[in-house]
Image 1 (tube, rainbow, N blue to C red):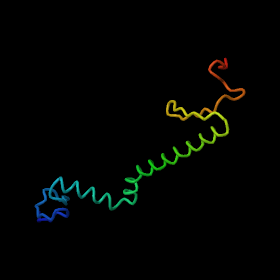
Image 2: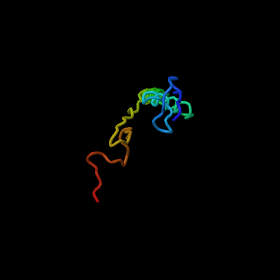
Image 3: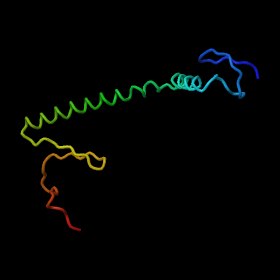
Image 4: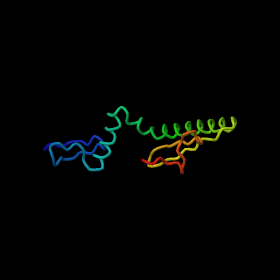
Amino acid sequence: MTERICPECGAAFAPSLHYQVCCSDECKRIRKRRLTRERLPGYSARLSAAAERKEKAARRKAFFAARDAAFAKAGLPVPRIVIKDGRRIEYRGRCIGGYGPSRVPHC
């Protein structure tokens, strides 16, 4: 086969396969990573998604703190959030007709 030049490091090499582009596995990994970043439009956005999630969590925390302060100022019980089996349950005190621990309906 003819001699080729590696697009990553610029070294000349004789490919062992007809579709070989890079001279080594290391250059192959570097090239694949670079091409992925260039080709995918949302690739860099996914990298910043973690920062976006942190910002969203901070906004949510500030909202709940303000809400709890408003409830406390109005003399109402502060809502309590409990996570059970991956579901978020919000308790806002007892309601008329609500089921308490001792008032479970019997079928």
